[in-house]
Length: 112
Image 1 (tube, rainbow, N blue to C red):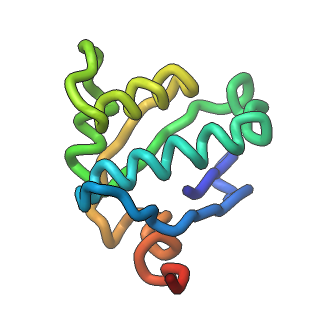
Image 2: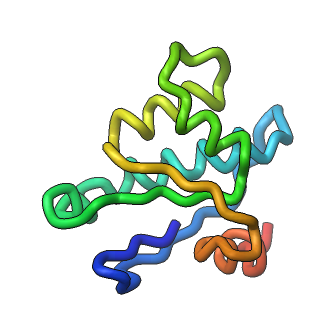
């Protein structure tokens, strides 16, 4: 997760992938995103009044779940609904190599 305020990076954070029964990248990414957003909500609440929030993802299924405003149908959409409840934001999809969080999440994973 990369948090920017007025085009300045104010926080970068990542967590290792969890071992789950499913190996779906979309589920693991949204679960990790929810954990980070919930953990640091108080630290980035000042953005609510001073800047617009944009949540960027390189995962198309995750982006579609965040954009969907209907009743959740699966675990991915449940976490997306939780993120939407935590943060009023806009959501964007960009290719993986252009994602600012890509450096932390894929290229420098923690050893297991």
